[in-house]
Amino acid sequence: MVQNQSTKMYRGNCHCTAYVFEVELPETIKTGLEANCSYSYKRGGIYMSPDNDDDITFVKGDPTTLSNYTFGGVKHQAIPPPWTPPKFTGPEPPAEIEAAKIHTGGCHCGAVTLAIKSKPIDSTYDGLIMECDCSICTRNAYCWIYPNKPQVTIVGASGMGYYSFGGGVWRKSFCRTCGVSVHNRIEDYSPEQIEKELPVEQRQWARDHLDWSPVNLRVIDGVDLGALNVTRVNGSERSGPPKPGGYVDP
Image (tube, rainbow, N blue to C red; front, side, top):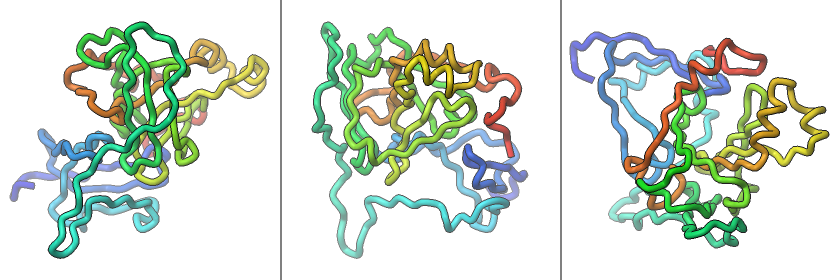
């Protein structure tokens, strides 16, 4: 930070609020570091460093219990090989789509890989691609595409963890090793399960989206996010008042 610049105390947290911290940063933040390395791209982080480690204080949660992921560490007089995208070795998605292309990708560590069968995901793609400013999408920097389940094959799903909140219909997946967000899962609910297990306000939504398998485009190799026609949604405003199980700033 620039010396003698006025600062203020900001408050931040993970989405489940297990960890809450305060950090001293410039009162007016106009710039941040958006790294384009392989890991930062998949996570979508924008960074700003405080002057001192002491400028960050955890008010909830022990930072020593956070999971860590390290790659590309440089050893004395040795340079590691460059990172290469993990190779997808699973079966082709079963969907039948004319003039389709198979797009592959995965998390950063390679524990989870996937393939999407769709029209080319470039500036000509006319399906829905969306970024949202809701509490969870902002924190994870998702860029969503919305294929149907037969268009997606995932290998290594046993290595994924899931996070859900609110009604719990959507379960957002992430690699349990490197933490990269992968997709948004909705279970294959039967009509009986929808009636018995889901809140009333979530039932029609589940019926309408049972075949969806939204994927975070940050995990797909070779896709230029800047060239896509992205719809930006003000999800934070559409959420309305907090609902039971919904997100609330701690």
